[in-house]
Structure formats: structure tokens, C-alpha cells
Length: 433
Image (cartoon, rainbow, N blue to C red; front, side, top):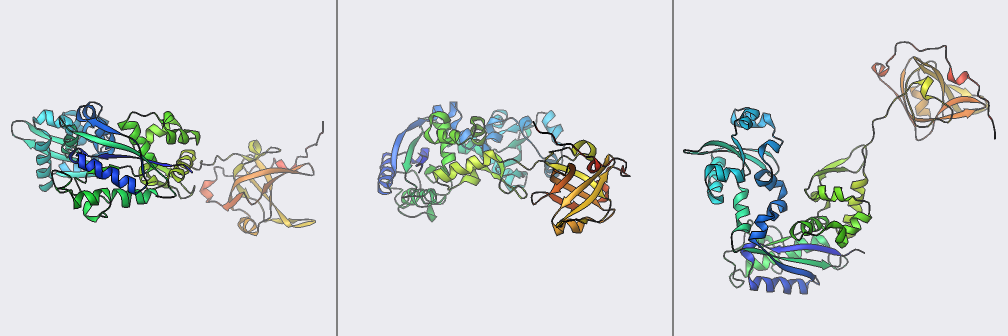
């Protein structure tokens, strides 16, 4: 069974020697092995945009992408601000949070204050999860429409000169500790007040002064981050440590399971993925889909999602061209010429003459359900049928894998059936080599 491998880090405000000691002690008690640990300094985090990539869904709108690269719902923008999005963009009045700091000549905290004021004044609109726009004004600088301005303060906590994160790559046996318990009982819930006292976040709250933390931990400053799934852990090792998927043990297993490198890189940005039942598929964020799964289950789910393909829209052909000896997967729109008739000597088999504007053909059916829809003059939809030669004559067979349903008359792209060409009336000579 594959081991669970997670990425954990102390946030800058929680990097103290005593906090590190508590982390090590907690891991030892829970049977969690530290494989690798170390510090990543603010300068590196800033230069490589590591925190921006870590919070990609939010940061992409705040620092990584300019407004012209974003997909803006123009109707929502106009409803909130009374302006056409294209005009605002053309006039250079749309900014991401990073550029807004430069244009308005403010720092992260000042931008955050302006953002809070805009929110209070209801000059803010939500376009989706982690995707906001606010109208910000500053005397002498003008009015701008800024995306995810709140992120800069969050980012500043990681890139301020002198600070760092302290990370751990850890392993644990899923038979002894499942991923859900690793997050819920070892890390603790997002709000430290809800966390068990022997968890990292709960322990930090209970002993924050002894741990030399600058302030009491809360939802926003909860001291520790840990991966929500084995895939998220891989994405974080690739981001923070520069690991390559094919050099990472779990990443290599993912590649061996059939997930392509291109797909892994795309999934690191947490896109929406579709999977599950073909007729009623699920569409959901890949990270949300994999949350709390153990290594092997996560691996299997990733392989299933990567291999999933939607049902293809069937292509419908014509009788004369499509119905050939040994043809399979036939899809036809036809008109029923007469009611089904039992085959002499095989009463369980019925035959139905149908046709389109290219000719006639005989259907061979066994199902009463199929027989019930075959009324003279009815439009029929035939799917996944196959041709069988019976005594040298063509029959289009509908077995348990085929579909025969009554269709709307508008589905027929012809007015009259060509009754002069009956494919099933032509005798084929069987030859043997």
C-alpha cells in the first residue's frame, strides 16, 4: 500500500524554535516520519512567486494575470458598476492588486484598508469563488476597478524582509493514520478554537505565549498549513521545493497509472474536472474532489478522472450507405413501414420493415419493448445496432446493447421513403477461401 506523503509548513508568524519543537513532538507521538525539513526565506518566496502559486485561485487575479487575461462576466460588472467592461479595460481603469499598489502609490495594508472601505460601501462584486472586483478611489490618482485587492496583505506576510516559512515533508502509514485524521486530528480545523488541544493548531492556541507566538492564533493566523490530499501535497512539493513529478515517488506512481505530465501540471492550478456516470457526470474542482483521500485511493481516482471521456454524440447514417454486411454500431433515423411480424419457426424473433430516403431495410428484434414502438408510420431512432447475414440476406439486429426508440417526426430529414431499394431483399453469396 502506498504511503501518505504530505507537505506541511509553519507560516511566517509561527516560525519559532519552540513551535518547531512542538511540531516534532506531535509528529513523533502520532507516528509521522519527517523525511525532509528546512526554511524558505521571504526573498525566495517573493522572487519565485511561491505564495502566489500556492494560493493560485486567488493570486492569479491579484498578481499573476492582468485584467485583460481574466474572464469577466460583463453583465455582472455592468450591473454592479454601471459601466461596460470593455470600455473600462480599454481606458486602462482595470488593475490587478499588484499593479493597483503602484498606480495608487499605496502599500499592501493601505490597499487592504481601501478594499475594506469599498466593501462596506457596497462598491464590490463577487464573480466567483476567490474572485472579486472593487471600485477604489484615491484623491489625485483617480478611480480604478481592482481585482482581489485583499490578497496583497496576505502576501505581504510571506514576503516581508526577514521572515520565512519552515516546511516539513512527512510520511505516515494510511493503515495507522488516514488522511482525514491527519488533517482533522493532527493539524486541526481551520479555526484553532475548534481544534483538539493535542493537534498543532489546538496546541498553538492553548500555549501561544509559551511558544513565543506574536499573538493568539485565529482563523486568519492559524500557524500551520498542511496538504489536503496526496495530490495537493505533490503540487506543493513541486511549487515550494521545485520537485519534478517524475522524480517524486508519488508523482512517478501517478505517471505510471496513466496520468500525463501535462495533466499533472494543469491540475496543480486546481481546475474543474468532469468524471463519474456518463449520463450524469460530476463537475468539480480537482482538489475538492481528492480532499482527504489516502494515497492509493487518490491515485486510483486520479487515473479514473484522467481516463474519463464524455459520451460522444452519435453520428447517424443512411440505410443504403451505412447498412453493409458485418456493419457494427449502426445509428439510423428511419420510418416504420409496417407493424412487426413474427419470424416463422422463431416466434420470439420479430421483423420490422423500415426505411429512409435511400432505401428499405429489415430490423430483427426480440424485445417486446422494441416491438411496442414499431407502429406503422412512426419515426424511429436506431442506435448501436449491427448487421447479421441470415441465409444470405441482411438483417439489422437490435440486441440488448442496442437502442430502439420512437423519435420526434422532426428528427427525420426526409419526406418520403425510397421503397424501390430494399437492402434486405438483396441476396449475398457467401464465399470461403
